[in-house]
Structure formats: structure tokens, C-alpha cells
Image 1 (cartoon, rainbow, N blue to C red):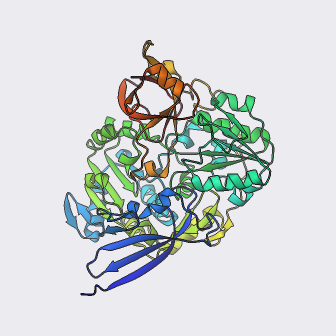
Image 2 (image 1 turned 45 degrees about the vertical axis):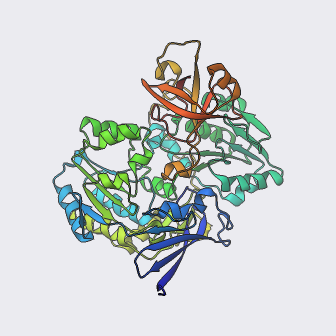
Image 3 (image 1 turned 90 degrees about the vertical axis):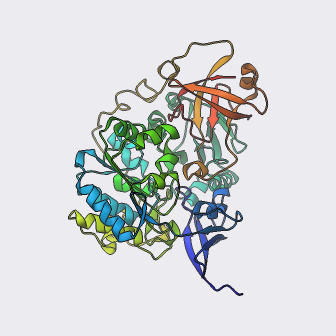
Length: 536
């Protein structure tokens, strides 16, 4: 018997990171209702010219809801709305969310979105939060930890074509494991005569010069010119001392800072929320544990995937009176929700995202289901917002008249705020005790012959941020550290900090001694640069 089906092709973007590479999503919907998704290359995309990294090729796994039959295709069924553990119609779930929000005091309510959705949904979510006098938490506590004068520089974009013309490229990220599509541009810049300087524990083949530095050493040992590009990334575990030191270096030299981000619309979410006070993830869970936050509304954001300590996050979330989740993905986190509002997959969404370069891109779909749910909730609290008015406001904030992947947002004026707002990082220079975690602050352990301290360096990739399995369930050490600890091939290393210990598989890599490189979050610390104790 021949199975009838329809085929939908979406000219979309990859939600894996802030580069937002262009691609085609091919969706086949049989009469059975099960949908298969595959990825095709889109060579016309100016961001990636049709190339995709390993995560982009595994997008069908990211979009799958049921067990995938192959890595090239995933079979899915629509996400179902839920109310108190029972399947529900979408309208009933929205109504239940509205009633739940009415019973919560504004002071004990929080809204959370990392930017894993469109600007228009983010705007509607902000309108809903605004009805309670609140802002939207993005997990980017860096905005509250840095001087206000630096916020505009965090939103500064550099085109990838401009990167290829730089005279010097300073890499504070590892493009081989974190942003592979960026590596192609760096290599092209090098072919055009650029000098590539890498700052980090891993020895990178593309480097003309390699440094392993602490933030307070950047200004002393690095000498970028005005024709240089400084490439770093911002994420929920960013060390404020590191980010401030990069920005100080850019300001002193006139070099252009270029900050990559973990989600497709992290830049858009940051721009729309930059002037609100942002909690760190640690502070968010602390406020939930203390009872300060009693109700939490998460938009397309999985706190179990973001939290460094999954078990501690589960324990904290269990203390909430109400957890509302709006998402298109099924999983453990959506299963915890008291009220689950189902929305469409990212590639079906109508709306825009702002990538790290400053391009305003179309998500590629024609559905406003997720936006309409948020708009209905906002309207219930006196914040009427339709899709076109939300889009107009987004364009005004970003400074573009339409979504055009060949047009860029006008560069922001760097450091325009004349007076510095006092923050932990503005009281002293980069690397001060208030910003940099030392071994005496963090580990508090006595030294022993079979132990060694190391500086924790995260090398986080889209696989980690989006909860997609990858062959990176290990940390990296150099050979001398392995020998010093007496570690055995195929065994594990004990990592201890903050009175927590975890056993993790390791591998030997060409990295600096005294560093522990991790492509995964460790429950012992969510802080980049923290000192940890290692033992066998």
C-alpha cells in the first residue's frame, strides 16, 4: 500500500549557536502523522555558504521527539500541551497559565528565556513580564556584573567578511571544538596575511602565537592594533573578569570586539534585555531554593540542560509552587512543568533572529502559534500586542527596516555611557579578587602528594547547550599532569571544588599544564577560571 505524504521545505537557520548558519529543513509528513526531518545545504547563505558543522548535520536529532531511525532523519510527533500532568488543548493550557499567574505575587515570579526563539516571541514575553513589573532573565548575568558603559560593546557585531580582512585575529575561543564555521573564516584571514594569536590552554594549529593567560595579563602581554578583531564568547558561565579584560583591551587599542553566543538569538535577546538587571544562573537557583521565587515561566529554555549540577537543579525546581514551560521539545524538563504550553519547532516559527554579526535573519517559518500564546497571556494582563506591532518594535530596537541576511545592524558606539555604574568588576581592574576566583576562595582543600590544583577552562559547544549527545563525555589534561596524578588510561580523574567531588573520564591533550579543559558542565563549578583539585 502506497503511503501518501506531503513535503514541506523551509529556508531556515541553525539554532545551534549565535552564528545562525543558513540551511534547508526538509519535512515529510505522512498520513500516519509522524514527521521525518532532514537537513539540506543552502549555499546561498552568506553566513556559512552552505557549510555546516557537526551539530548542524545532527539537527534532525535535535528536532526529534521519538527515537530517531537514523542520524539523517528523525521521526517526531507534535508536542502536547499539559496541565497538571494531563494532556490539554492549547487554549486550556494558556487559560491555566493565566489563572496561575494571577495567584502569584509579582515579587515571587520570574520569567526566563535564553534566546532560543524569535525576537517577536521574546518581545511578547517581555510584554508579559512587564505586566508584573519584571524583566526577562536570560541567564547572562554578565550584564549585571560589568559596568553599564560596557553593555553596548557586548552587542557590537563584526561581519565574517570583515573578519577575513583583519590584520590580526585574537582568538579567546577554540574554534575547532566550539565554532567550527568560524575557523574557516580565521583560516581565510590568515591566508590574506593576518596574524592569528590564540589565548587559551589548548595549542591550536592555526595559531601564529599562543598564550595561556589570566585576565589581568591581557593588557600587559597582548598588543592588538586598530585593524585587529578580538573574538570571545559570552554565555551563562562567562567570567566577568575575562570579558571586562577583553573589552578593556579593545577600548585601549581601538580593536573590534566580536562576541559569539550559545543560541541563535542570544544577541537579539541580549539587546532586548540588556538594560534589565540579570541574575546569574547561580543566583536564579539560589532565589528558587530560598523561596524568593515561587513561580517560574520558561520560554524555549531548558534549565536542566543549562544547570552545571543537574541533581541540584532538580531539587531546586521541586520547590517551586508553579513551573510554566512553553516549548516545542519534549524532555525531562518539560515533564516537570505544572503547565506546559506546546509551540511549534524553531524552523516553523515566523519571526526574526539577530545573529552575532548583526544580521537580522528570518527563522523561515510561517507559524505564529508560540507568539499567539504569549500574546494571549499578555493581553490577559492588559498588555495587548499583535505580531505586526511586535515586529515593528523589534525593527526599531535593532535599527533595520526588514529582515535581510545581507544587511547589518549599524555598529553601536562603543562605551558611550559617560559615568560608570559601580559593580564588582568596576571597583578594581580586571583580575581583581572580586572578579577572579582563586584556589583559596574556591577549593579550600589541603594539598597532598597525589593531588594537583588546576584552573577550570570550559570549551562549551552547541551539543552541550542543546542537550544533544556527543562523544565528549571527558575532560582534558596534558601528559605531565596525568603522570603526576598517576592516572590510568581508560580510567577517571576526581575533580573537587566547593565541597563537591565528581569522577569524570579524561583524555590526554596538548594543553597547558595546570589547566583542566572541559567540553561539558561540571557539577563542582559553573565558574570559568575556578581552581579545582584533581586526584586519582
